[in-house]
Amino acid sequence: MSDANEGYALAVDIGGTKLAAALVEPGGRIAHYDRMDTPPDVDAEGLWRSLEALLDKLQAEGGGSGPVGVGVGCGGPMRWPSAEVSPLNIPVWRDFPLRQRLRERHPGLPVRVHNDAICVAVGEHWRGAGRGRANVLGMVVSTGVGGGLILGGRLVDGASGNAGHIGHVVVEPQGPPCKCGGRGCLEAIARGPGLVAWAQAHGWRPDSRGATGVDLAEDARRGHPIATSAMKRAGRALGVAIASATHLCDLEVVAVGGGLSQAGPLLFDPLEDAFRAHARMEYAREVRVVPAALGQTAGLVGAAALVFAGDRYWSAD
Image 1 (cartoon, rainbow, N blue to C red):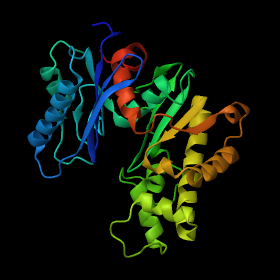
Image 2 (tube, rainbow, N blue to C red):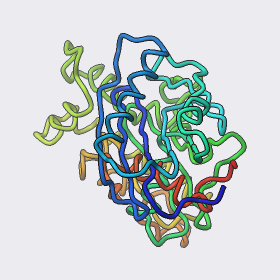
Image 3 (cartoon, one colour):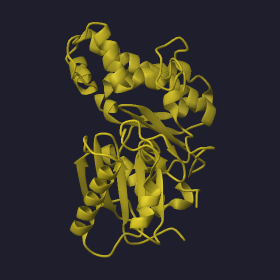
């Protein structure tokens, strides 16, 4: 089936804390949007029914004709492109046949599912901070650290759909253990919960069980020394990893999104310092590292791009 070029795409963003969906126009504008908290006390089928209810509600509110295609970003890992998904933050879904279920719900339509961080990268390249550039790394720094890679104006999938997963670039070989089984991965250092744990181990809110990365960033803004050191630690790790990716891939723009990126200069200043200290090749010095432009909608816009711009962002059909 050829890529859709009119009507709207049904875009979905599936995460451990929220399920979001939107009707997205061919130019990337979100016409209708809805979301719900990811239900915590349901089984696999209960979660699927919740997602279906959200999509039914959204489409009823949007009215008009049905979608021309379905694009989805979902937390990983997953078997790609068949999209049997096992999101780390959604334990009730293990090898859940998400793409098959959506195809049954929308027979005859293109249904395209990719990692949620890759959808953020695609959204930023299509309509965000990387628009007009051919070589872009998009990153998400939040509960985890993920990414997607655009080279020569096209999404690079890799052998298993995981190309661009910068979260497991090693930035401290003797650093903290990572959930992947390695040590010193960027994700082990810069992800929000890991950063909170590091700060608490060094005396920041040591008895607070509900402390978050948002709390840490707010205290850093107030000048708390340990919170400030934690943000510098994350920024330096990001800068080192981005310098390595830049030398390897000859990038033009790196767009950094996700919850922790909302810390602004507290994160981006040490990131920039570390990046400039390590990105020494002449071609790497031209790279711009910028906040993601699309905010919390980047994943939905990227999911829609899998439908509307599949010639650049979808290679599996």
